[in-house]
Length: 155
Length: 204
Image 1 (tube, one colour):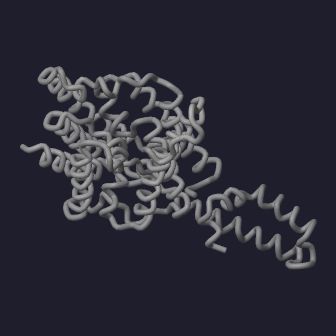
Image 2: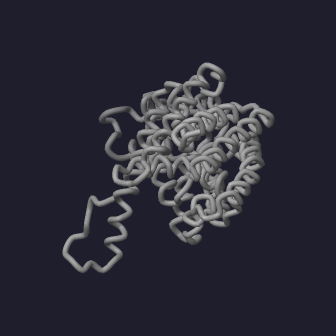
Image 3: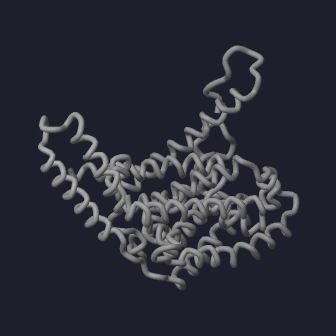
């Protein structure tokens, strides 16, 4: 299978899994997070099912191709557990609890045709752009600037 | 009047106590006798609070517990993410794929867009084979969803991952970093839902 075909079919199957698992229903996500109310633990089963398949597959992939950084997780493990990670995950959680969508299900739900999903995805892309162009600015301000004026739009 | 309930800022003022206080404040200063008699204002306040209570009860419905379907969905997600690793050597973190896919300079934007098109196409396929995957309507207002989207987009990039990247792919690698992220976003998500559902009394 070519790499492009693999990427496409992976996306399709991923979407089917999200839909059948209940991840495309914001009410269900919110009910999962509502541990003090009418708690619906279904989504823990989505995670469990995914991990049950992923863990052995990942172990197999790692054994098969040792030097690849993607399968060994080198590029992903390089970061430390820092404020950025915790703040980012914290902000994401607030948005997740408010809207009931995380990125994958939101893209999949575009097919459902509700204008609310389009608004959410648009705002989500906006938030990603904001990080992309905003983060370098913050970093520049913290650094002592050798020249006058930091580089702005070089994401 | 109903349009007001779609703005989150004003909704915070909707809670009975704050609204009462505000109406008293307004009547005692500029509004007294000029625009609205005090009696009308109190009646209006009462009606608003009543309308809001009604809308609360509508949105507080329970969802069905679906362990089998959810496990099956999870297995499919695991297979899809596994295929991406085996065939492409890539991690199926949707926020990373989307975030890096937005860049025009980065190498290998191609496979990311192919994956995203597949994700959207899978949504279209769901419409035919499993239409109940999509709700007929969404209660939350445009303003709340726009705010939620902004937070999700910014937060997932700052924290380098979302439910798929940290919650599934990261945990499957036994990454401590991903565990910390997953616990954090679940905690703030639960706290947000607690505030919205139990302190503010319903969906915004």
